[in-house]
Length: 471
Image (cartoon, rainbow, N blue to C red; front, side, top):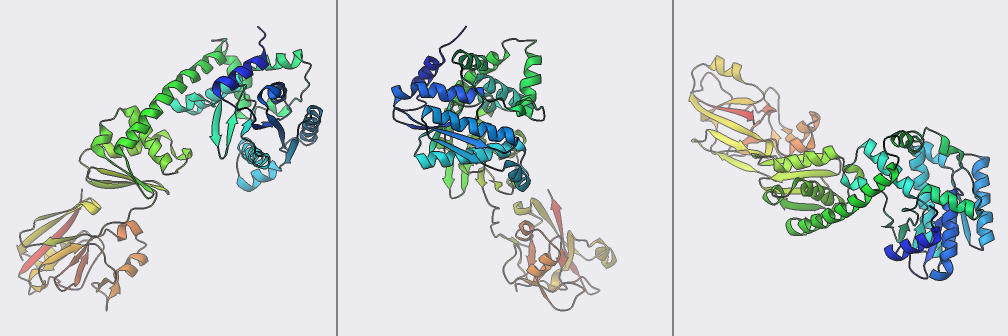
């Protein structure tokens, strides 16, 4: 059944407010049937909407003379219609070599960059693209095959804001066959892009192979996929609104960080939990490429875990999740550990160290066998002559200027330099426990080195045995 393409587009523009009266609209014209038909339709509607149309074409220089011919064709078409025309000549192959992007991604990036520049130069409010309903169906199928969530099934929007302009797709509800029929009916000529037949591009594989094969099982597959996008768009809009409300209710914002309480998060439906995490990451300006399902789940599981007091999850170089008991903080930089100090008294037998998820076992005992005591010494436990210690003892984090007199070496050395020489990670340096006596003398760096002080010897009568145990 033939449709009135101009009337259909007029209806979509009016109902969806794709463009306002008096707008300057940049029309992306490749020279193929879709974009040429779009230009003709918008030109037919121009008097009624009082638009100013600007034709924009990008010569990607992929196909030599064929690409040059398309640029010439578009210039002649714009001239015939009396419209201004901007041609961007971009060496995309060179850009691919420079950036290592794949061909289609590189072409899209440079094309959009050019179109935005044209829009800025002409003071345009809209950039119009000729993506149609079959393109939409192919996009959804590509996402399904690559793996996507509900938001991916929404497909391409008819309109979206990017930078200072609105990107619009007036043909998104119109199928390719209707566009081709419109061109034939009105004797509209166009170019044929030979690269559309190359199966090295994933979209071409979908269009040429996957969709025809699946149509054997559902001849109305594109229509079915587009109905799916309509349904998912409504549900996605609803859930996005609910997530925004939850964000405002339970999340507090600080500079480059977001904070919430575990109890508030755990009471949410799992769908809202996942969406809230995504929304928080977007609020921290961490790009959509960071939002894979496995990343979202690892964050969600950390928040929901029982019996966790303090933990830091480094999701990647620009995202850290810090859990402090029931408080959860998302931040874009590595957390600075808080200084700590724990007193060790004569009645201390166990000391919990949440900063390193460990505990210290303390044994106060008389000497039974000096030889046995010496043999039991290791990196994670130490034996000290109790009568040589100036009590009280303190187990604390490193401080600026700390020095240790290492056992077996002459003199002292900065603790900071010892850590650097051992190539100890910065995150560990800030939390590793130091055992210090009342005079400030460092006796032991737990799990690392002991000092030459308070050694167990022949005259030792009482021993303090400290053992570091990871939880």
